[in-house]
Amino acid sequence: MKKQKFTYEKSGVNINAADSFVRFISNISSKDKGKKKFSPIGGFGSISSIPKNLKKPKIVACTDGVGTKIEIANTLNKFDTIGIDLVAMSVNDLIVQGAKPLLFLDYISINKIDIKKLKSIIKGIIKGCKISNCELVGGETAEMPGTYAKNKFDIAGFAVGTVDEKDILDKRNIKKNDLVLAVPSNGVHSNGYSLVRYILKKKKINLKNNQFLRKELLRPTKIYVKEVLDLINYNLINGCANITGGGLADNIKRVIPNGMVADIDLNKVKTKKIFKWLKNNNIEDKEMLKTFNCGVGFCLIVSPKNLIKIEKFFTKEFKPYVIGKIIPGKNKVKLNGKIDWF
Image (cartoon, rainbow, N blue to C red):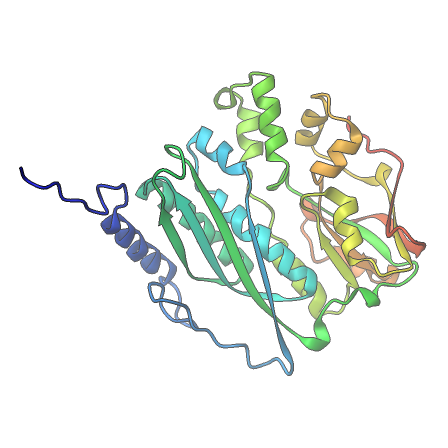
């Protein structure tokens, strides 16, 4: 009897497809890199130089994913924006420390390599990197049969940035009477999607037939890098917070110094139609504020004298507005009033 031959491909892993995908990434990411400072994609690791203009350079690193927003992408079979979300979730954290994004890596794990799907994801990642003015320098694509169900995948991102020691945004810079500004989000961003999907399931909503939800739930996370770094360069902000999972309270308190409180007036928060839709699905205010950004994608903490100057750095859609101030106290964040959802 002829012995059966076992191969990696028979187990469900296609090395040739993976190699083809790596060549695609290398080609697309190197198209307009005349001043590229990094070694080519495809090696064992990327080598990069620390910017020379920093006297005491510090490295800041962040990692994140996009959570179950990928299931919305799977449902709609649309993957060209999820990569922007992936970059946004890390670089929006980097800038909170005052760091400039320098490089980005991705990790994609999938049941079976689908070149068309992966190309769409990567194009989004490269677009996110371009918006953030950083470079995709490498990553990993893992084909994992038996670990993920058919057509399922997950993605993670890793961003590295640099900041001069003197430019680090230290919470000790935040003072009494500083203003707390809300920078609008452009929607749900990439948090709270397990609750969103739970509502869709319980209400038996066919996402494919709902134009409003199709557009809103795959709208890519706003990247705040350019505006915030410009403000830092002009020394116009004392602190900032990326409003992600945990909402306003949990994220703002991470940057408030001991002995100070961010006194937030929820009546001033300008929400958006998608959050009104969510609220209308029997979600309590407390749950909304804990799960979603509710229309505030990023917060700036600034001296009152800088308010007018700061507004000029943003387009009308993302123009910051005052939602609170810094006062003495113990609990770091105090939420007053109530959002006017409707």
